Length: 270
Image 1 (cartoon, one colour):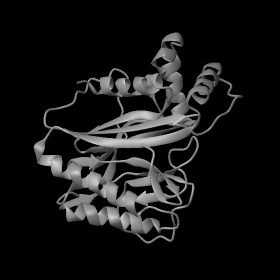
Image 2 (cartoon, helix red, strand yellow):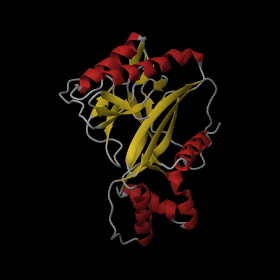
Image 3 (cartoon, helix red, strand yellow):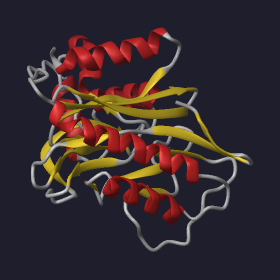
Image 4 (tube, helix red, strand yellow):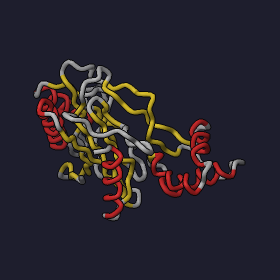
C-alpha cells in the first residue's frame, strides 16, 4: 500500500469523525523512528517484512490527543513491539499526581530491557497543551536526573521507542523534512503572495504542525505558492522537522497513549 494512501485515509477519517489532525499522520518504516509523513506525490510503499509505526494526533478546538501503534509484518520483530506495549502499560500504571517523571522513565527503561531490547534515549514523551503538541515537561524513555513531577490536571503523551539490544539506541536527523510549523507571523509582509500564504497557514493550522501536501489545493489556485512556501521557510517564518532515523539503522517499534493525571491516577484518553 502506498504510504500516502495511509496518511490520507487516517487524516480523512479524523475529519469525518468531527476532529482535525493535530499533526500530519506519521508513518515511519523500519529504522525510521519518527517525523516521516508523505510529501506530495510520495511514491513509497509499505515494504515486505517491515515494521510500520503509525503516529496519529487529533484535536478538537485545540485540545489534543496523540497516540501511536506499530504494525508488524515481520515475525522476527513481534517481541520488540510487545516490549514497547508493555513498557507503555508499566509507565501508565506508575503515573499519578506528584510522581517524579524519572520514576516513570525508569519504569519504561527497565521494562524494555527486561524483554531484551533497548530504549531510544533521545526520543521522549511530552506534556500536551492547547494547540501545543510539546508543552512543558518531557518524559524520557531512559532514567535521568530530574526533580520534575507529574501534575494534577495535566495531560501527557507517553511513547516508548524500542530497538534491538545491539543498536545505537538513539536517533539522528536526516536531511529530509516533510513536516512544518508556523513560528512567526507578520501581517505586514511586503510580498502579497507571501502574506496570503502565511495567513492561510495561520488560519488553518495555527501553531500546529502541517504537511506540505495539505497545501496542494492552495498551490493549484496560486501557481507561485510553492516558491513562496520555500521563501517563508528560508526566511524563518516556518520551521521544519527532520525525519529521525535510528543511528545504527536498526528497526524501531513504538507505542503511545495520551493520559490525563487525575486524583486516582492516569486516565487514558486514547
